[in-house]
Length: 421
Ligand code: PA5
View 1 (cartoon, rainbow, N blue to C red):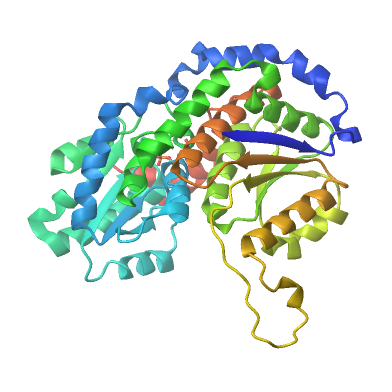
View 2 (cartoon, rainbow, N blue to C red):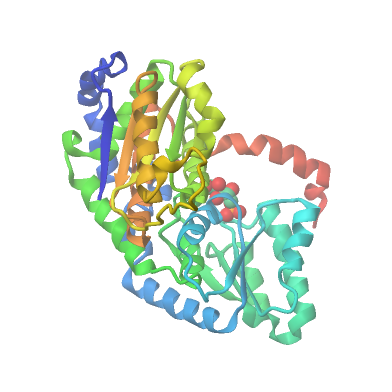
């Protein structure tokens, strides 16, 4: 399970929390039931809707087949179509599973060449994930890769292509016309909420991740958050605290962790909150702190700079791995580390940082028991539900993203998209 801790709660920035949390209970009640006005975006609220036993079994079978035949699995997708899978794969991929290569998330010519370079002489499978198949990056990369597969595998190329798109989309038509396998992208979930569906689960399963456990984690968290009252509901408390800090002028939230395996999870989290909450001239700007490395850069600002950031630490409770410091017998000024476990050294660094930073700014800790597929499932559901609640408290729609259209129109005009027949 996930627990939420508030550090230095007697400090002035907690004033008003109780009345704010009491006032907004109606928002929790509505979110727990699901709201008709967001009916086309809440397919994730009930994990069972898109990650039921039948779907899990299908994905496990498909992934086992790909694992058997592929050296490289190319995941084409951007934003909500690749962030969740990449965050878990980068943290938990099993050995002896296909190398996962990411494409469709950049327009860089250099990156395109690098990506193709990784495929030479290897057995390749491709999964193109796109909700409506109009996004430029995945569309362009899929073109390049289809041609590449055609040249390498001839009429066997379609056997190596899986597309994940919505029923009735142009991507589904492309699959039907060309004999590619097709997986359903939930039509009632926006990309950034699709971790626990075909979108996130197929690539994770190819990388050997236990998706059954991940779904179980999400589903346990669902019960927790949709049934608990405001007083004992951690998502509600977290959402209320974010809004309280925001009202006090803390306009940036830093998600910070001392475990580098969370590096790509930050990207998922940043997208979720930035795209859901940042609208109507409102929103908390989400950033990540990769500690302990970034204590030597942004740490200065947090401790001593303009107080506009609050910090949410992500911490792991169990002692999962050890690496002991041995001495080489030389006097180097680090003898106080002799015999110590890096796990413990890292934990002391975390505790010291929380103590120091919470003297200056609001600090929270979200603690998970261990880093595994089950807890990734919990984290996905927890943050999605908390984000939805936080947006409700802030008075914005958590599920649209009108702000990303402005640059697209100009770019498509410049590229001549409107002229295509
Ligand atoms: O969360 C969202 O809806 C977006 O970030 C999308 O996931 C992203 O823009 C990719 O869209 P698509 O899957 O249609 O290519």
